[in-house]
Length: 166
View 1 (cartoon, rainbow, N blue to C red):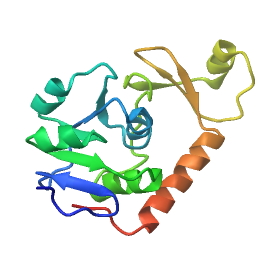
View 2 (cartoon, helix red, strand yellow):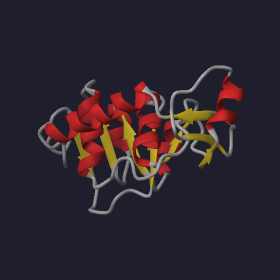
View 3 (cartoon, rainbow, N blue to C red):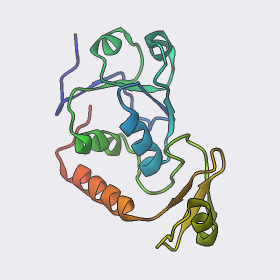
View 4 (cartoon, rainbow, N blue to C red):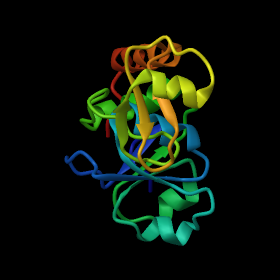
């Protein structure tokens, strides 16, 4: 039997601690990137992962797969809503704090601050930002741009919605 659904989100065996690691299933690639950017979360995302691997992990598992949610023992979130604002509100209500740390949204590597001139030379166009970073693992460059303003707006909207907590 499912726990009570809250705003299109189901929770199981969550506890009270902020999760150390989050395992996001194959249907949630957008969420994996957002958790890395907004919260600096240690996110495992593998589109090829088998359900058996997800059932056994000690990490928090976030899924859209109802069968996996039923089979899994341990902290699990089932996202039944398509509302990305509600998805972000889930993690805010778990105590995760946005914008304190970011990691590479693609690979989860640490970001190192670099001179924006270096970033411009690497990407081949002008960057209108005072801060730039490079991923120590994959080498991708990042800077504050219009996408950052959209992320801030997303967080503000997520803070304003009714709590999606378990």
